[in-house]
Image (cartoon, rainbow, N blue to C red; front, side, top):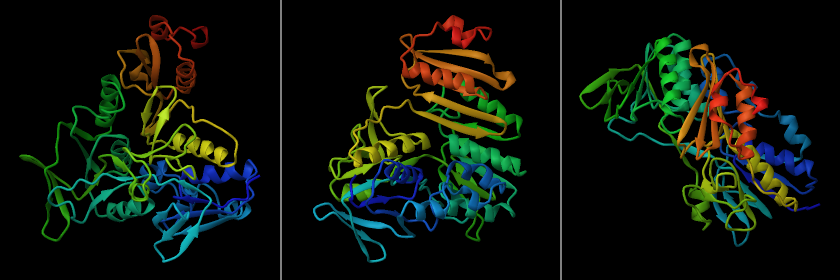
Length: 405
């Protein structure tokens, strides 16, 4: 097995999976992990939920203990950024003035928050939610806050709204689009989430474009302005999407187009450099187009593929994408991609908090949104991979056993 030095940039889900796969598949050479945060790789999804609410301690966010890295013989460099990649000499320059050499490089750079740079954007009390430090800042403000305004009704915004409501805050969500979760679900599912948040006491207002943030005169935010309307706020959380981290890759000449471009093996335009996770634009075999996915599952699967290829074991990333979101007593599990659907089929009753919405394109199942229904999710995921054409009428009947289809 290879004795080459593998450097992984980005302390993430993908990095942990890559380390595990490299060692399991027999890689004997040095592995170096470089992360710009002061923490070992940690689980990000709970940040907007149980860590936000204080139900989960920081130590329990860690994906693996320090012992894992010691046993895997990984040199861990935390609190350090890679500032430049010299592909000709296969060397990395670091923010602390040091350098690292690599034989194979794996970029797990993730993404960064899209900033809402309107007047007042730099007032204190305006937060974004992506890292432990972000949530620590939010939690420090929660004690003195009564009114929270969340900008953006995507996953992060709605999860933060649910967590804040659980803590007793008055919560208003402002969404620029005409419905919540506009980019990822059908109107039926958006309506379900709108009603669930309103039942919990959250005010969700759509068609709201933020034009500025108002200040209280002490440097802190006091409101969110949308044209002629102002919404009072003791603190604000902005969740208006993310951008892939591509600056480092682009600066060294790697091909980037809305992400670091990789092939089915997760190799970049440089055969010695691989990439995995949110930062990549990759070919999706099942849906026949290039995608950039913001998903733990995708990051983990791409990391496995990259590590196998680094070990000289040919592998292709061929995976049906899936996602999840937890809000209140609702677990949403999504399999596939619903863009381009021409028909939806509802299975079950939304009033019971257990149902599924199936998406079809020309008779073929392309996605499923399952609410508190792991059976619908698992069955739908399998059918999507197999390119099935289940009968919509039978599927809509809850009395029909899924196995019979």
